[in-house]
Amino acid sequence: MTKSGFLALLMTFAIADGGPRALAAEGDPIKGKALYETHCLACHGPQGRGDGYRRFNPPVADLTSPQVLKKPNSQLLRSIHEGRANTAMGAWKWVLSEEETRDVLEYVLTFPR
Ligand code: HEC
Image 1 (cartoon, protein in one colour):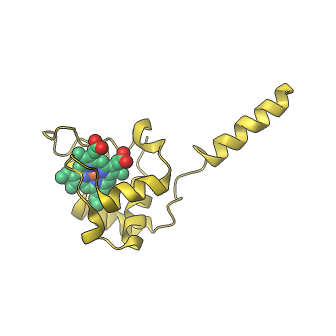
Image 2 (spheres, protein in one colour):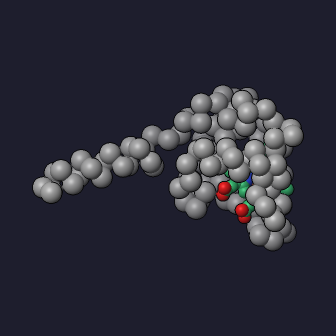
């Protein structure tokens, strides 16, 4: 493959994956902010850095970290909806509608990285 062909391929992946992803959960970040502050802030902290409640084991995820952000939105939506087994991250499907789950993720994706 030529060098420019390779670069074009790389860029395709960058756009498909880590590219312009903010505001990509198809939710409303304004509504999401209110939901986040009510339901998520106490654990995840005001800017998602996992600096709310610090005594869980495994610890609260830093929502601005590559470990979390490398996951596709579909997977993060599922984590919020279903919770994470054997962690303090509970299932929010009992509290948030699917639309509200998208709103809250949309807001999470606005945090400075
Ligand atoms: C009781 C504390 C607590 C609350 C409240 C909480 N979380 Fe979490 N959250 C956690 C913990 C602990 C983890 C790390 C789970 C793990 O290690 O897999 C986590 C992980 C996550 C992840 C990463 C999931 C993944 O697949 O890696 C996301 C996204 C997330 N939380 C979003 C939210 C949102 C949105 C809310 C509010 C609706 C919320 N959390 C409320 C404790 C909490």
